[in-house]
Length: 228
Image (cartoon, rainbow, N blue to C red; front, side, top):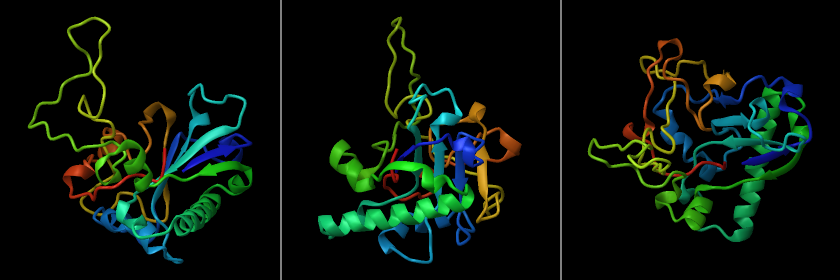
């Protein structure tokens, strides 16, 4: 979900580039599988886990004088939108934007009132515009059989791109200390700009001795993010 704010995010207590918000019902790492289906269930009592990325927290070079860009990211599946009419999809998007922004406002009081633009993309959006399998944000899973080329090449000034180089387009990681999530659910985990990765539920692999987990190898369901 793309957001435009008419005030700096730090006016509302945001101090980091990226913040992960985990709802109280999410008590184990395996619960992220269920999280991918929440947007399709459309429940009143259950919020999806999400990440809040505030680009004005770093020297991004984006809209230095406003509106200040931000994004809300989370899990989704193409199946969550199957069989719905265009109007039903629009209404469901509006409901979820209302719910997630309301929850964000509970984390950072007053921030909802600063939103002057919002737009939500789904895994179906990525499937239609990018033709990625299952609406995956970063395309195909790299099945390289152990070979992962580096971005740099033998030709000066020529670099490889895409999710098949280095660590991939998004190497999803999370806190995973002996099974349960490392942070209590219903609390937020914030990352400092110096350790910012690209948005999502990534954390610094070296932080606090916490083991990094690649969700794609943990049976993570295919599907896109809420937006970027």
